[in-house]
Image 1 (cartoon, rainbow, N blue to C red):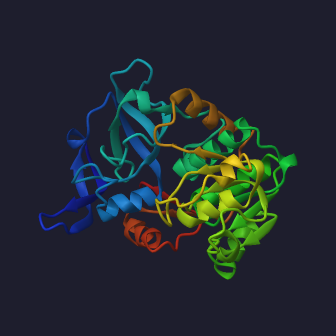
Image 2 (image 1 turned 30 degrees about the horizontal axis):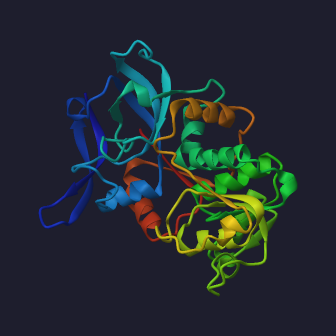
Length: 329
């Protein structure tokens, strides 16, 4: 079967070319299940793949798209049959195997999540990796003992995909939320829509004083940014609070001291949504379909395949706000 895909090519001189091409399903990666993709979400990792980032893109040519939701077309695995609605996030989809920016994908059955009956295909991709990563962050916070009674939780990068979902989920569970963004004026409207309790900018979440500890300003944090912002989240966290690390849009490096950990008992929790074990993955998707279900009015932009290039440029320039959803024709 022939189909359209947004494809990334790397030339011998290292330059990268991106274009929409016609492919055949016989060209797809190996796997037991062929899925016709209806929706896919655009993530920062997809933008890095589209840029040809060697630490993210595992092969060329490559169809990015680490998220996909659609219907099974063919399956050699008894767990799935033609017509089943399914979703996929993470693993090596869109990185080492062709992903959701093509109208078809072929994947291992072990990567597939049956679509919860309470979710539509579109809703699952409105969440996508961003919503799932936020849910995993909230899950780990609560499993570590974080409660609303402990005080407010800081969410950095709150105007982006993961951050906005983290704010919504924490509010859903009764937490007071401090939304942190790089600038107040640029993200004000987004933060208002998220209903965060307080909005702070770089001056409060990116400390450059050099002090090993700061006056406690939040009881926990979900950090999407990394680098010095993560270090600040740790230094200004109340004793026995928890901080999750799920992104590195500012930096992959972390320079701090042991004092937040040995003097304040703060816990740093790593979030790996790409390789999350399937039992937890299934549990979280059911949470998102039922008790944790949130709405994102005005924060989702739906685009066709032809709109990907412009959207990718916004991600690479760090100007994206909210969630971008690719809908295949």
